[in-house]
Length: 235
Image (cartoon, rainbow, N blue to C red; front, side, top):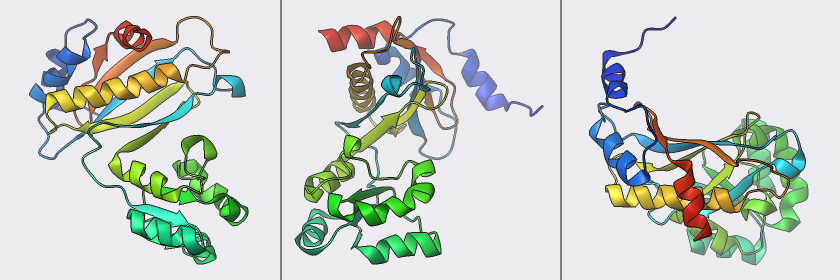
């Protein structure tokens, strides 16, 4: 069994055995930082759903009010006017069939998001086995299969985050960097939680938010009061 480092043990010891509000958790996580790099802060949410059933899958997107601290590299697969529109919107790489072939033949994956126009999806569909497992496959539900490519690129660049449940009914999503002002991290986390609550499927029964934890790349997990997020969304 791998030994736990003294720094993380010391940090965990300062997290009380109780549920924290976001206003308490964010500054605590920042106070306990010991890594020498700018860690990513992430929310882990355990949901009361069974992802084996399609009608209980939770998936959605949210544009974080304060972004993620870095600009995502966006590829747009489109042709004609839509390709030009994507370039004007700030897409990093724009192309058609040649992009599909490059990903297929060269296993090129030097990007963070892919947007495609509906007319290109017949070709893009061949990339399912490559992009799907990495969460990069364009999907109409997340706004990445669209003719409004400019809007899609701008939202992704502004800090749009996609979330979806894994096989265990968990959602993991970044909400910023540990160096962000506490108020910005808190606002980003609230926006993500509100979107997850709004995405509750009608088929989900019982308690929806079973557990929420705020953590950083190297830091301890700080358990949150899930009822706070649910009450805010209803307000």
